[in-house]
Image 1 (cartoon, rainbow over the protein chains, first blue to last red):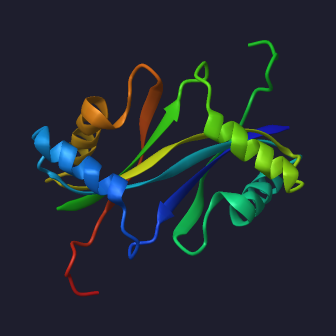
Image 2 (image 1 turned 90 degrees about the vertical axis):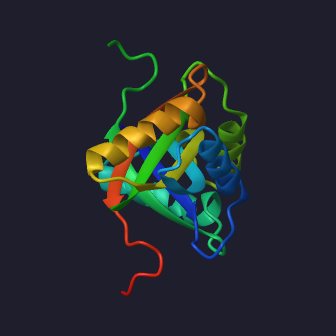
Length: 91
Length: 91
């Protein structure tokens, strides 16, 4: 089975986020003053071959620990797991 | 009221994603051969002052349209809206 696993990585609160700060400033310049803060992380979609949803989740967690998230600066969480149609399948 | 609105931006399928490709290659080198594809987008958290969840959502959508997502290359969606404790509040 094919799954799409969505992983979000976020910087820990104590870690500065210059990209988020610049974006916040730009939103402010556009008049969006209701936005009080911006933090930017990564949103990663893994296409995983696995025999169950649980298995797909554990592959995604292993990938996150081994490579995708930097444990010093970031946290990660699995946001969503969807069954995916393999490429070339009829719709 | 304070809300944290989480927005995910993803590149459209037709758009190449070199960062995702490099990450896929690295996972493969680590032996994670069950991962068939990787796409990397942004995961943005806006801290929004709004009087309702719906209002917070529309502010986040306006921010995405005006600045956060590039409509030529990307799609965006609101993933989650949480009530946030303002800074300095007691725990």
